Image 1 (cartoon, rainbow, N blue to C red):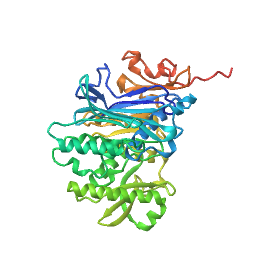
Image 2: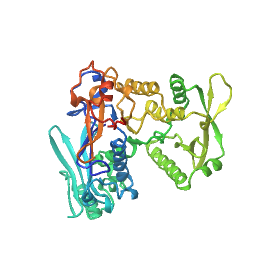
Image 3: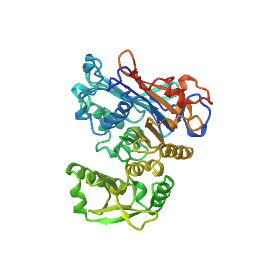
Image 4: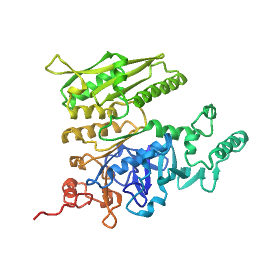
Length: 452
């Protein structure tokens, strides 16, 4: 579970800003929060702000940190420092998450010099109440590395020291990434350092960052009849007109030819990675992914049976018709819902979904129903949803807690972004939040010049 995310000197964020999923003093809808150690975490937050306020910069910051951990510094990020100040090109950009993993809270982060694409520092601490315990800190420029030692574990301590020495001056890779490359033997049995694997896998498998034109992770609900039935029920409830979803075989060569070669290779790599993971877990289900072909606006289910790639496509029946429809026949709003309902139907625990412009192509009533359905599920599930939106119908204190409504605005002084929360204003429970927001009482709205 995400508790806090702090960033500085990245895109529109100049000084350190913290996006928080920590519950405030609000008491209503307490069943939508979860207690972890000393913290109480929210499961939902809607972030508002005018165009160009910094909402997408927040989403891109999540994306950058995830990519940096898994694949290294993105090559297209050299100018992603806050360019409001010329000197920021030589200043570090900082990223830090506070996350709860297996009922323990950890602080992990790094500094990076974006203009030179190199990491400068990296750290990981364990939090217990008001105290923190060092797991490791790393300063690449000075080649210093402090790492936890374990009593009566001289062999493990020596291995950690060797791994630290191997990359102490390497600014192209994070230690967290290094500790998850060809080191499976470290995590067998009752390993004392499972946090390195658990934290890395949180970034890789539990954090899902999505932009307006993206599908939301994998369409896992189509992989079995039970999930497909649940998807059909939800699509009918949301008035899409779809009554049934069916899977049909497609020639593998035809499907793969529609995909760009690098992307097609990434699909194969993903399937093989799933295969190895499932072998280790004793899971004999075939690895599978769902991809969208934007050129043909089609959706494909791609599975790995042994060494053979098998492709299938999805087709839809509508009520009042016996015809079959493909994805390209559906409206933009229906396609957006097909993307989004993964959030409602996925069985993956402890997921954190970050979705930019959640209301894109959706009617306000559909957006509100989607959020209401998620909030109902959040009572039973440890899952978090963070959305940016302009949909003011969600600004309803009968629907959301005050600490579930956040804002981003640009400062008058320099144009940099700041993050704040509705709860900071202490609004009354019976107040019309939407009207107050539109009148500018919480800032974070466009300041339009009068044409009169």
